[in-house]
Length: 348
Image (cartoon, rainbow, N blue to C red):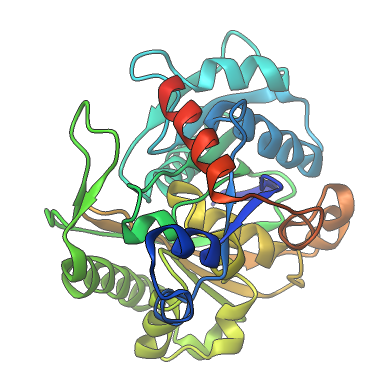
């Protein structure tokens, strides 16, 4: 089977704290922080979008892969906030990273699991032999309506993975998908912000699909939670992945490295993928990783990775995710944040 041969992430340096948003709406910040398990979120600048962040993450992934970008056969980008409804995102990314006109590209959408869809598509094409390398990206400049619970969590960032068969840093040893028609979150055309069904997004949405995909893939692989070094679940807030891990039998230690949402926020299509980059930054040869994404509407993709010896060669070849998350931060007041948000929305 194929595997990951390079990875990279990008996190904007701008942040806004939960307290700053709560102050504007007269909300109880301590209660919100406890309830959501969040402290702050990353915010895109007005001149940053899914394209620019994808390029930054992709360059790191290609550097770690140690390949010529011209050898990449497919580039797939999953997002809820592609800059254009009609113009593709991938064409600009391909040219920016030094790809060729022969590269196949497509923009993927499936709420927050669009990024893992891109990973699956690249993996399948590599394994089929149709391409040598595939680049999968999950990125978003996620938005939540002012005053809504999503405003405290919807964040910006990107993650990229190069898939191939030669010199993998993490082999894919199993995949699985679990999907139903569950309308827990949606945004129709011309709607500026997405809407959600409140608590309905929990049990029938996130937990049914995340747990279903996780149990299904472990059964296929004949593995139990004790067989994994690390586990990673979609992170719409700080509490859901902890709850999912507990129900499945994983320990907090197994998920804590990849659970970066408290200081990043929910990057939607990039949520699981950025968490995976944080795990790969510290992973050791022979580690086993379980990753389960979630996208409203609704479905989950599961992957099991087996880390190889090559991981030690690539970890220091690009900026690590925790370094980007914890350093060089610039905190915004709500007025500046709102100005940035409005400019981004007008550009989309």
